[in-house]
Image (cartoon, rainbow, N blue to C red):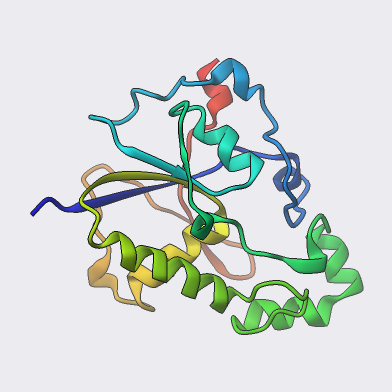
Length: 190
C-alpha cells in the first residue's frame, strides 16, 4: 500500500503578518500574479494540491498550480473580534484575555474558535487523510500547521520526529522557546 505524504506549506507573507495583526481575508504582500506557477516543478510527480478558502492561501496555491482544491478544514482559526487587531494593542487593551487565550487552549475570549476546536478540526482532517495514498501539498496558515504538528506529535512524543540529514531546526528564545521552520519567500525567486 502506498503511503500518505503530506507537505504543509504556510501561505506567503501578508501585511497583517508584517504588522503582527490577527488576520482577516487579506491578499498576499507580493506580486503573486507575476510568480504564478513559479513553483509548479518544486515536487517530483504531480501531487494533489489543496488549500484553505482564504484569499491568501488561494493566491499562494497559484504559485504551485492553476487548479488547487479548496478544503474548509484548512481554513485559518476564527479569531472572532480580534480579527485585524494588532497583538501589541491587545496586550495593552485586553491583556488578561490574551494571556488567558495563550494559556488555555479551550478558551476563546475573542468570540471565535478556540485552539482546541482548531486542533480537533485539523486532527479530524489528518485522520481522514490516513486512507488517502499519495502526495498531498496543503497551503494553509501558521495556526493550522501548528495544530497539525501538535496532533502528530501527541504532546511531546520525540520519537515521532524524523530529522533528515543536513536538515536544520531553528529554536528562538524570547521569553519562551519557539520552533521556527524555515521557508523560502517567493519574492526571492525574482
